[in-house]
Amino acid sequence: MNANIFITIMTNMKKIRISSLFASIRVHSRLKRLLEKAAVLALLVLAVAGPAAFAQTQPDNTMELRLREALRNTTLQLRAAQSENAALQVAQAELEKERDALKKQIAALAKQGEKDRAAAAKEIADLKAVVVSQEEKAAQLSADLAKWKESSQQATTLADSREQARAALETRAAGLDRALADCEARNIALVKVGNEILDRLEKFGLGDAIRAREPFIGTKRVEIQNLVQDYADRIMDQKYTPAAGETQK
Image (cartoon, rainbow, N blue to C red; front, side):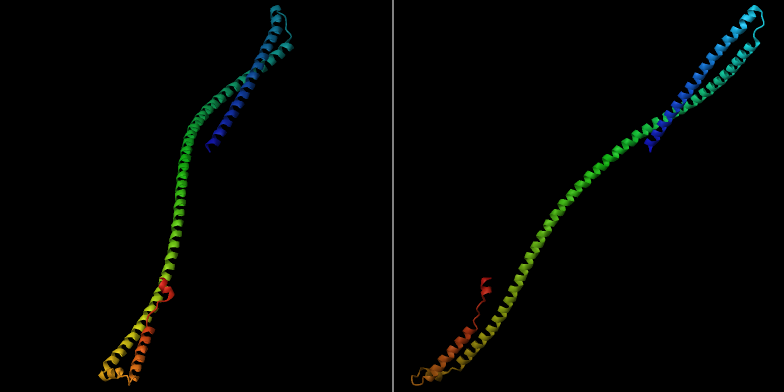
């Protein structure tokens, strides 16, 4: 906005100077011509009237009157030109005042323009500093985001690994629960077999022992042997054997 005002002022000053110069040139040229014309007419009047006065003869009134009329007209024109010149000088003085005021305004605008340029330069420098700071923050945020993505990927991988381990442990725990239940069932069966053996031993008396040793009564010995073998088989059936997968774990 200040630049536009400055250009307008300079343009107006040029127009004022040119107009004033042309007007001054025109008036001075006109005055010069009128002065020259008046001088010539005055010389002519003297030339016509002078010899007649010197010789005391009657001059040519017609020629003298014409010359005097022309001189009078020229004098009037000269006075008008002088008045116009005086008015022009007044106008020129006003224009010079306006020019001086415009010069002061131009100086003030130039000073304000310097201040505005300095303020704009400072603002631009501040904005550049802000841009650099924002770029640095953006770079730091990008680096932090990359680290976060890497940590997130590692956490996801670790979570997947832990989930797989948990699933494997659950599978193994389920197998162990089944094995434990099987062992408990087998222990119950073994306790039952042991109790039966204890009952048999409590009921096994002296007569049974003698009959078992008699060679002629061998049926009882065979019966006892069969009974012992039956208990042994039942005990072996209840023996716990780990599965292949449990043995590897």
